[in-house]
Image (cartoon, rainbow, N blue to C red):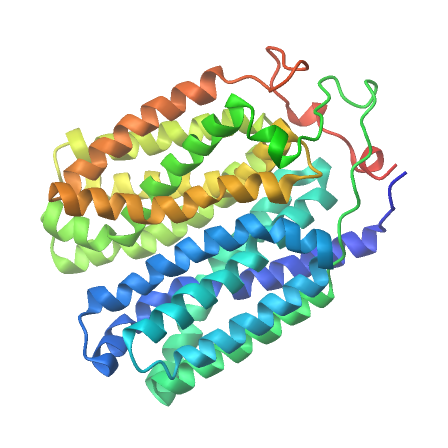
Length: 414
């Protein structure tokens, strides 16, 4: 027997998750601070920017641990603590006097706070809406993406009018309050009841993390996730430089790609998130991979121009945004809802690894092209995986879970 949760509590948890995700998404305004921090610490911008790589890796590691924290303390307490840590670490960042302290405060601590809240609240919310997993993921992760846009204007205003230290402190206070308010609105999702054959044509058992990692499907899906994250994060992070140095576009035209990427990223989250409630998640990921492959191919094989560049970055950003949105639902389709935070948490380490692999390959082999060819090869392999993969275990058949086979809200709350 599982604990029931009212529709009012489900909706409040969804709203609280959206508020929390909006605040957590603010970390993607980090590039606004690089030059001023470099001047303050008298170091190259590239060394300051490395703190964001540490942040991304710490975020991914914290995401993989957040499931255990939720089991012990509950989503509300962990989210509130994540908000307190986020506010404190951003405030400490304001007074970092050297690179080591910057890497600790802005990299390790901010990343850990953000990652602890991000995946746990998302997974908890998805569990509460098993009949609308794609739409709920789109709302939550869309809020995360919008947070970077909203806080861009907030942080720019305070940077212009209050200075670097006051901006960090104000940012930390606003984000902390939002996360705490969001956390207070949340309730833990109940354990999902076992599905009867009447409730689902293709029942999916709940795999523990130990069971999931023993299946080949887990590692195949991990590779697909790593591939899309590496492609998306690398291109998004250096889009302006690709436009200038690789495509040889004027600075203004190359820089305008940032706005296109933001729109494409958000569009991918919304379009593919909603689509995943209509067709199977694995088919949606296959579509996303095909679109990303088209974008990377344009960078490698098309005659370089403003149009081909814009086409490429839009395709890659759209695919990345959509994949990040759909993947929690995909993992629950393969390994069940009850252990989603743990199972997806380990796969989510690919986000942190993907954030640095592309840059390392480019540095070692001396240019963008080497990373693009690596992306191309991995995308082909990943596309083959999505077109051939089957559900794990003895219940796997040629039928991949589709929306009509997923449990209804009533069945999930029995």
